[in-house]
Image (tube, rainbow, N blue to C red; front, side, top):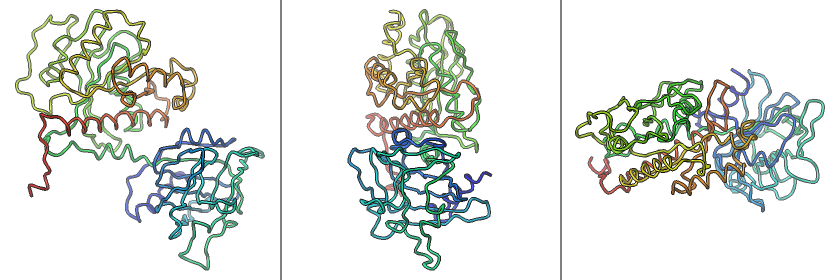
Length: 457
């Protein structure tokens, strides 16, 4: 176990009041030779609970935790956080981490957020009023890299909003932490991966009497449906596996109705089932097959013939809600709709009409955006601020008649290149939002009877 893993376990235990914690962390931001305020906010804003870790020059590891979001308003603002704390430990595996909690009546100034501020703990307004200001945009650069160390332009002044009050005789002072200097080997921002844990713990609404929500992936051949399923598997298992056969190109691989469960590295099964089917193409749409599938009447492992209507379908009789599709996800790789032939456009309109007739929620996964922007192909993080990606999302939303917030850009795993935080974030956000939209659909669906099981006790 690395020193970083050891530290994060101690922090998780402290947050959980000593209880076993299922929290996991993912790396959002790292600086080894340069700190940058804009990059920090691009990667860390709106990420929920985060921990900032500085690996000091003088045998110290230190930093801070906040349960709130970092934001970047033009006018700096103080944010209340009763759970925030600072921490420090010597850089060896036998030393215990020491925690410095927020003072009583100082919770309102736990952190400071601003467009010119990096991670900042405490409330100012004077320079020495911030307990830990890691770096800032100023007349001086955020950092200077020399002698293999980052010299940050922030400040370290413990005992303003944070205090180690449990032992006054040995209370921590600023000079006890890395000699009071912001000279570090590297800086990291970690996010507590609550989205992943929440998805694992989520269950279908009471009263539906179903085991899981069923999500159907639909799209043209080669759009990336099977690759998206493999990406989800990679995110939840931590290793690349091709559970769904997939390859790039215009030749279809999936020829049957294939339901896939999502299973974690600990063999936990999400209460989600993702359906993959044959992609449509110039000479082959779906016809009645799609309607039957949405209604749960198309058998699992149904083999799609090369021509619509060329075989007799042995329909499932009286399917339960557990066999029906609950949300449809179009997988779109083009976003250049002028290139679609009239026949492809006809297939898409038929699909949209069938989904609309059933009243099911529709979302879109936007894949292969890295093909439109070379910066994304080199660094997935660029997608979060890429104007071409934002334009593609807007075009896709307009074309399919959905809200922009219902278009999810993803970058699929296509090989075992190691986990990429940004890829994981995009995939997790998409599937989490689909889950919540399915819940919303059932909550308001006229034909669904929900009840509060507590009232029956």
